[in-house]
Image (cartoon, rainbow, N blue to C red; front, side):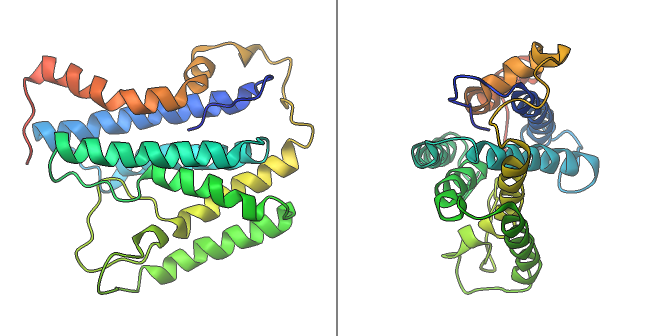
Length: 235
């Protein structure tokens, strides 16, 4: 979900971000229709659920790849985490009850900062470590703690609730997969397909501004839905 700061952009990463953005926007339209207008749409399972997870997974993998190419990961990570905190605050004020505890921006910001610990590891070790983190996620689901202090790690209390939640375990594993892919595929830090006719298209343009679009898309969606359906109400 991060806009590359490199002088020479790797267009296929923007292309993938653009795909992720479209999937995310489609998911949030369906989510908003259900939550705010009571349209009978199931987003907790089935195709809509997997559409949302596909978007998030693609963002996470691309963020991991981008970290292997960037020299400003600490700065970018802190920026994303602070934006995540801002979204948590604004959402809690505008839509009371819509908790966002360690959502996708919190996760990405933290993971990008943590990459400084892993950046010298070889791709094979990153893949092994990523797999271990993902496997730990299955174990963590079986554990219930008395509180939610360790929610960022994926260890929850009995009454945890968050409308957007991507804990480090297991999602950091996917991020590390992306970092390994970056080290394997982009050793020259150049596009793998420099002469592709797909270099210039709408998806690439969207991907180049993925963070801005992410921050603005929900207010725009709710505004458009309010014009179509009237003011929204909480369930």
